[in-house]
Length: 171
Image 1 (cartoon, helix red, strand yellow):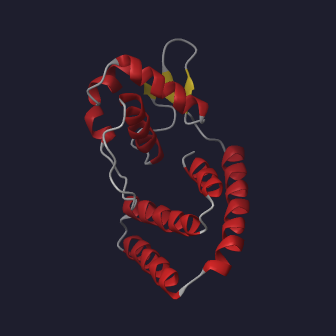
Image 2 (tube, helix red, strand yellow):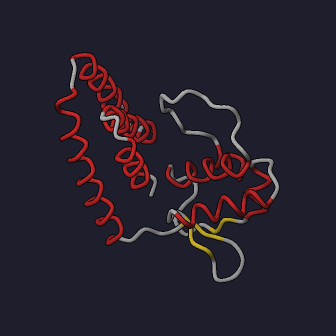
């Protein structure tokens, strides 16, 4: 059922914020459902079903889907509606090449900033991810692994670099 598509898998250390405007909330929930594979590549997205599942009107849902199309997570159907974008091999390789270049830059910026406390924090995050992998809890592992990489990027205090990595990771 549609309602199970929109449970949050966000385990980031960001503090909870006030309730976002409906379009922002729907966009974030949809992005999470796509990147966590609860919405599958090629799956058709019906604004009426999505609206019902998040208790919103269709207008903010359509606006949110338009946003997701702009960042490449969904594509507009020839007729009415959207579908989850299928990512091909070439797109995947391109994303990994860009991600690699960005992460090399993160490492360059982070090395001079390393402290024993930061190293301990990163080790703990990495150990938590490793434990989840060994326990074969792959969804939780992916979430924890992403938190580990985000913590590294955040530690550089380079907001643009963090935003670029998040954009690549969200695809």
